[in-house]
Image 1 (cartoon, rainbow, N blue to C red):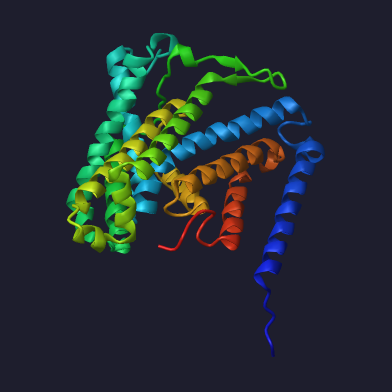
Image 2 (cartoon, rainbow, N blue to C red):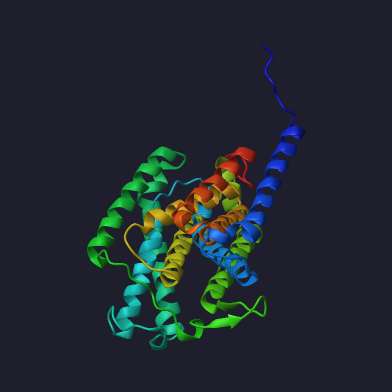
Length: 350
């Protein structure tokens, strides 16, 4: 019996119809169908605030996932300890802040925090130290297993488990947050739908944009960035040209680990630090890279934006009794993208 096959044009048309139907249902649900949701009724104020929540959340997702994109997507190194680096960077920044302010875990408010000395510098120190930890792991454990993805995954999972247990023993199991300065603990009048929005969340978005722009310029227009991209495509040819590819990969691994630690400092200020968040942020980074496509920085940005928007919209507009199931929509997004583009939106075969 002859099997039924569809031409690429027909498949693309069906996908377009499906996406249009999903978008139409989303518009209908937000405007008319969300009367049983947490918002109770439609309002432009709520919609604009939710969209901003999605965008700023995407900024934090991208900040963490950009390092994972660099290590896993470009260098093809399976670093399952990326989430542990996120948590470690946050805990180092938290420890330095509490020690320098001298108030311990209680009574630390934004009015007692200076912008540079007690917030920016602890976060940067934590990120740099995590960068060196990642570099040490790459040089001692991963350098000898280049191209062996399963072995790399097992090694980094072991490192992640050990690091998680050590952090639990040293920092305890109670959730803690990094206090951010009073200058960011305010709300800005955006003059759109009467929305007053958090200056701190807008600052996170700004940092994510600057990091993305810096990575793009580094990879596209510097010699080191070009060697990284060339080494991924044809490592043997780069080495035949007399270039020490190991030094370049070590620099890239340091940068990727540094970004994980930086994300930990920002994420600890955004929400809190607690055992288990290492696995959650590893999953967040994986989802962003899979949606955007391996090896694409632009794909990581688009993937983070889609992930953040779906997460924010589902959390706000689902009925109250189903609000805990918003994670389902995240994996629905992942399934749709993989069905349409198996290599991700901007990915290419390894």
